[in-house]
Each structure stands twice: as C-alpha cells, then as structure tokens.
Image (cartoon, rainbow, N blue to C red; front, side, top):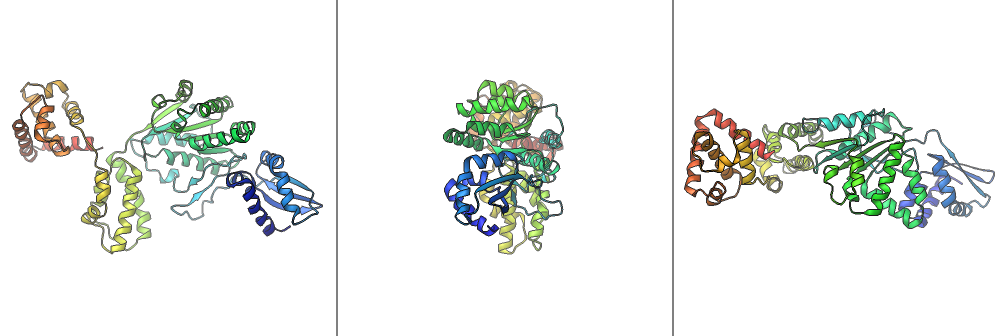
Length: 452
C-alpha cells in the first residue's frame, strides 16, 4: 500500500469517525511500512497508538484490507521525531500564520497564533508584572506560584501571553506535553467523553500533561458537572507539581456562579491583573505594528501626529487599536493618498465614535477631588472658599467638555446650583487655562486620567 492510497483511506475513515475524532486520533498516524501482512504506523505516543488500536483498529484494518487483502494486523510504534515541531528560527514568519501545536500526549492543543509571541508583546507599566510572570513560567523550570492566573478586560493581552508561553515551552522543550485550550473546548471534550462513555480516557489524557493552560475560565461558571471535573483535574495536576496557567476576564473571587472551592484553588497561586493600557503603552503598540504595515505598503506616507491621535482616542481595546491601523493603511492605499489626520478622522469615524469613553459627572467629581486632595462633599457643597471653589469650577468645566449633560443638569449634580453658576465657572476656567500654566497642566492631566 502506497502513501497515496493511505491518504485516500484516511478520507474515508474521516467520513466514518467524524472530523473531531479524525483530527485527534487518525490524522497523527503516519504509514511507515507494510510488510509480512503487518501495516506499521508511526505515532507520537504509545498512548495514542493503544487508543487507536482499541477504538479504531478494526475500522482501519477493514479499509486497508479492501486495498491489500494480505494485511491482517496493525502495528503502532512511537517515532523519536514525532514530538512537537516548532517552527525553525530561520523560517519566515507570516503575520497571520496559525500553527497547531501537537502535545507529547494524545490530546492536541488548540491552534496557536504565530503573531502572539513574547518578542511581539509590547511591555508597559499596566502589564509588566503579567509579562514577567508569564516569562518565568515559559522558562519551564520550577516556579513558586501555581497556578498563574491572568485576568483583565477584552483586548489587554491575556491570550497573547498564553500563546507566548506555549510557544516558548514547545520550542525549548519539544518533549514537554503542553496543552492549551479554551474553557469552552474543555467543556466540549468533557461532554463528548460523557456521551461516548470514555471518561477514563478523558481523565487520563488531561492528567498526563506537563503544563495545562485554560483560557477564559469564566465560561465554565454555572456548569456544575464541568466544574466538578475541572476541580479534580486541577488538583491532580497540582499534586504532581505540574504547571497550570489560567486566564479570565475578572479576578477569581469575582467570577459569578463559580464554585467557592475552585475560586479558592485559583487564588492559591499568583493572581495578576492586566490593567487598562495607558497612552504611552498604546503608542508603543502602534509603533511596533508600523514596520509591518510599512513593509506591506512601502509607498504610503504617514504624517506626524496620526499615531499619537489614535493612541489618544482609541483607549479601551488593543485589538480595536491594531485593527484601526490596519484599516487606515488599507484605505489610504486604495485611495492613493497620504495618511493625514483628516483622512484618519474620515476613515475611522465609526471606530472613533464607538471608542469614545463615556465619562460620568460623578467620575469627574471624584477624580478632581482626589487631584486637589479635598473631600468630595466639600467640592459639591455650599462652601465658597477658594480651596474648594477652584476645583469645583474645574470639575464643572470638564463636565461641560467631556459629557453630554446640559448646564442645568450639571448644576443639579453640584449641590443644586443654578445653570448660570455653571456658566460662570466654565467661562472662568477657559480664561485661566490661557493665563495660568498650572491650571492648563491640571486640566490636561485630569483629561488624560479620565480618558485612560
């Protein structure tokens, strides 16, 4: 039987077992030789060979015998070079290449994005602790914290760090069994094992990994059976000193409908918050992406101030920020115009509107009172001392500039003051902003703080 014939047989087997089972169990098989009535296959691990022999051996043998009736038996041997093969350092990387990682066990990881490595992760003050902790785990040695729990909002770099850890581990230690998957995939495989009555296989597979990485663990909250199995898997791996890395959109104690015992286990390691990006970090991310776009669009001219404008205006989500830059270069290339501030505003009008941070009057009042080190009650109260009146006027000015509230509404939020009082305060700060450099600096600092 030739390799071409085996390739056709694999397609027939896929039709019989389904895409998921095919991907997990049949696709890793490599036909080595057919001799003496024995078809020999190379497999990544003995566990996979045993599993395929028990569950799919008859089906494979039936398909092979339809081509070569002399084949009466299957043999599976572990190939020395079947461990995970990371991409070579000299191989060119494509921006959107996605490489699946084969673990040393029978259970394949979810695909890893080639772009998400440590050398493409821009480090700043909001994420430096998370980056340092992830690098420590990626070194593969013993750590003093297990699990590592990363949490933060959408687009702050949790998945990037998870992928980067997996890439480094599989590159430095191809023999290490690294399993990365989402909590949804964990639940899907658990349900599939229940349905197929293969729970022992499921338990053995997950407990045989060296590093377990579960993304978006909040997904299993409220799913009692999945939580139960996750709890036991977690304990079994910790007892074996195996590393666990978890990510979620909030701290363990804040995940609703998650069992208390799981929250407790997740909090026993290092819990790291990825804070919202600041202006400097967003600008650094844009600058790091600029070279790739210049390679793709070498003739495009980018005016000064565009990156700074984007970093200032799009502050909530790094993915949106990167997507805006990609869209801007593509648009400018199509219309064959330089990338100016005006072009940026026209091209990204919808993104800029959606990214406008909704600042409340109450938030402005808190920030201003903190900045001037006075009590909030004094700022909105009736006292007219200069130490309270000036911050009050600053807060009114910011409310007028940064919210859609009317002057009467703003006045009501400041102790029931008349709208004419608000008008006077806003006008006074507009004058001082030009005359007094300290007031101008205070306004700029407060604006950045509120928009960040």
